[in-house]
Length: 452
Image 1 (cartoon, rainbow, N blue to C red):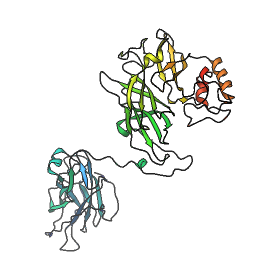
Image 2 (cartoon, rainbow, N blue to C red):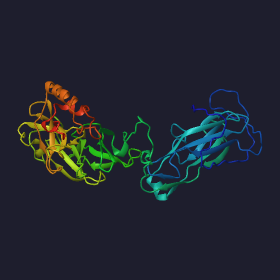
Image 3 (tube, rainbow, N blue to C red):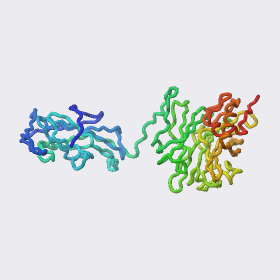
Image 4 (spheres, rainbow, N blue to C red):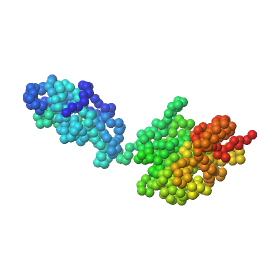
């Protein structure tokens, strides 16, 4: 059996107590090799009072002073041949996996050269319910120095090497501290990773949206997608973090809308914010799905219908800390077009609020819709003039010609008050960023109606 070679020095992990055993050595006879016809050698010790081998064990995992059910404890065994001839270090007993010769890999070292130190790193133990009940686990090993590979021609036996007892705690391991919760001054252009695969129990994180509450808090929301990165219909959830110090730190991931897995699954996807700067209410739009995806949706507005991709909104009155009043608004978004629009979704990101003119205070969220029998999406502005109590859709727009008209109009719109999905405030005079220009011409309610 071949093991990796690590050098002569003894290794010990921090905090582990290493136990060495020293036994008196009997007179040594000529060993019989188990490797075939070979010249017999005589094993001898340089010091009559020393043991033929020294064995130590040390923990090498990073679980700390407490372990929990399911944790994997890892052990490194270090052994030294103290004699002038080769011998076998043979594992006799252990409560660890990966040590005994009854399985592979194991920690037997055959023909360990004279005055040589080697290590075995395959010893492990997975913490069990019995360990939890006992409250402790002690890694234990017993060894023999033998002349043969099979451990029958014993030079010295009953050499024990145990590690310190490990405390086994009940319950689950507390999550590791999230570095994003500690304030950090980020450099311009430095990236902040708010989520990664596996975080908060979601294998995939997609479709981000971002806004700023009236009190200055930054709120980031996105899809937490279980199992795969699949779009609706899947039991996706809308999750979010808040930065209360201008982006230096972020709260732990929280859930605004929780998906429900199973046969009767419910999912929420594609978040978008609209902030009412007058009242401070923050609206979080999303898709609500049951069994139908974007182009599998059917005509209708019944909020309980599982074959419709629904429009949904929830709101916050405390700057994003909590979310209340969840409701399906498919009937409002589709009003006047129930026999035409079979599917819809809020364009992810952020909507706007008009600040000047006859419609000052109007809240606007952009949507994409499609007529029955087609897969051609159209842009439509959904707005509210009663601070989000009700919502109404304007005329839908589509087509390359209209997109070009919209680009020209928006490119030179001299209004400084317009903002869009992705903008953090008023747009610079004479410019708007891409989101509105990508969706079509300027809706009638977004014309340049600023005060003189």
